[in-house]
Length: 459
Image (cartoon, rainbow, N blue to C red):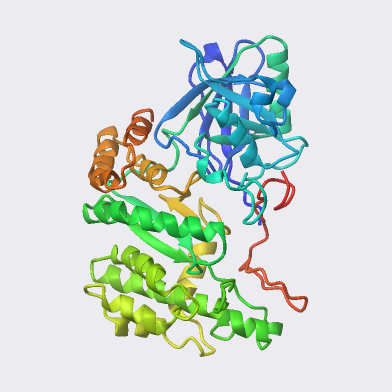
């Protein structure tokens, strides 16, 4: 499902000063300045990997490495380094699309010292969202180590920048996240996390669970202090009417094919996952109504610790975890869940479906996991420090941004991680079934985000 998250590149002659940027869906302002040759506003798309400086800026000089113009080999092989020299701006490397994954290009650029990467399309076509390689594909292990921002630009803009550089022009860029839509006019940040309860779907599920475990302490502190309001969400699909009674559909769905999930774990199927999704959604609803929404984080981590194996992925194990949480009544959760075998709509899951396909600035949710901050999709590394910086960077007032981060410092300090990168950042501010008989359909989804480019397995 190709989602387009637009960013606007404002290209201005240096002497003109400030550019006015209008945003398309996913906001970020990239200002390109040259002495003579480029002037205009251009759309672009930021990558779904790396760490973006939410609330800050990044200024750098563009370099186009012709010997490794696609960026698919290590730059050491060409004796190229992008380490900025004293009194010079950091380097933003421009490479062409093709031959390897987007994320690999960013990884090689980062290793060579680049501060950011621009990737120019190699044909004239609508822009896409750059994503990481699919689970199980080669060379995807480095994606969690990418810390530089990435931006996808059109072929025409890439050609113009390369022509300017070839003619001896100096092209500087300014990535500006200060006015992006993560900023919020009120004193509280709203954020949502889209996921599912399948813990055995590969690296993506591992990354999702690792984030929840690592972030729950900071989430609790910031929610209790009133800085943030969190809502978890769960992806659902439906089974086409013609296949509702098929064995595969019955094993993947509840409520007569209305709500389905892929079951990829050993010993439990999509129906088990869907029931657990509903249980987790109802647990949050009950906990939120009791004034303790942060108990959701405790349940998710404890359920994963004690119930993720095939023989324990059950209601009995789930209820045992729920009873261990102070203030949660399992009977209220059961009442919320209703009858999953009945041929009726479930109000909780209908609300989830509406939230996923709602019309608005973030568009339809089609990727798991997905994090929204102030109703805008977070792009970057799903890691505690990066996400915390993005959430706290959502406050308009600089003092509140710093205070938000300082409130979470006790939790961050317990991990033994250095605080310097976080402080510096704030300051600089499918349901796919391998069955020849039927295809499940996502609710109204028509686009596919490409993990790498041409298709899920290419650049």
